[in-house]
Length: 282
Length: 227
Image (tube, rainbow over all chains, first blue to last red; front, side, top):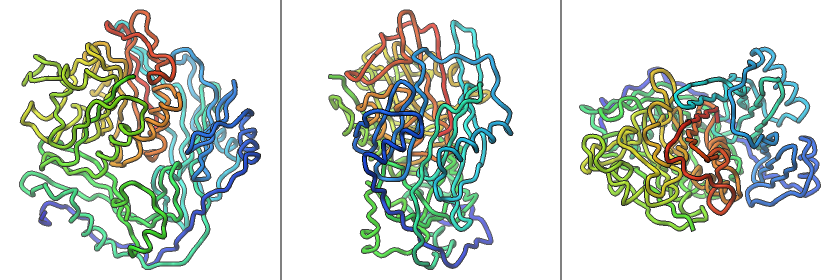
């Protein structure tokens, strides 16, 4: 068993005593509704059922509509030619935000509260016979979701608008599930959650003389599974951020999620979690 | 039919923290992609030497000609860093497949996935092209991460589904990463081009264009973006 000296833990942990639960009923979509959604993005054509996604494409672009969640991904038809470092620069941050905001307004914002949290870039480096060219081909305006001021973590809760040097939107992700407010449950004390986490098998082979685990942050929120996965409720979790240091891997920065509500085994089944290995969550 | 292999590590024996989902991650890829399954080595059976060239580096116990370079695509899931993917045991080489010890594609291999943190890190002084260029000996592309990535279990399966659906290799990786990471993570895709090649248009075998091998690469292209 690892000893507490292996861990550097944050002091003064606190969290709300109770948290609202949110159900996320799976969408029911008709073929007409799928086609109408694709049309909004200028894509019309026969939808292809890829199992987890409906894909509609034409020479202008492609829309993927996820069967298990209210998520979609649109992209402009990509040129067949290999990528080139653009000569032109991208619009400035204010203009990028303006373009992204207008795009989301026009194409429909999901019902959650989305907030922009940063602009990042698609970066390209080409080394052609030793001659290097490097640049930013696109900007990515990124959004996160919150519910009751708590963040919704995970890959199933984000939006991203990709913009090229001409200021045109070339790609759009909207990963989200519509929520329905449910009951309120007691939150597991963060000290208990952290103790459960530090006693997990992740650290069982580490010894204090040869390793250190520094927990940097612990925050309460909800977890959204990938958009291809069915999920009936947003799972209340603690997001735990830390660094594991060993001689062979001196700085492994991790983000893990620890369930923040005590679910019984029956409740776990009723949640309808079909994730292959739900242990990190539940 | 094209062949695939996977290696994954959950138990690091104190060399690093354990991981929970790398087995499911790699096996999701293995069980889903339309391919002939050649090998599945996990934990203490996964060795850095399986990825390394014989006679290169120190120790020089590489054996890729028997393992990774006998299949068309390999998926590794485990810990990593800019120094390369990290393995749970160090009794066959030094437990880390370093770029300087890797020469892939002079056998069969076209693509390698390093589902591991920072293997394609690309900030000064960690230039991804300079670090990995000598590893391309016919290899088409390395799929990986610039930043830390999650210990999760769906990405391998999604990548395989995307490839089966006929997506280009780059798009299949980017899309799988977008669906399994939040927007703090950056994916990376590093590929080589040579005379008469068009690796950028690569698809999985049987699903579209597959370039000739860039046996003597003249250009390297690195694309990265936020998931």
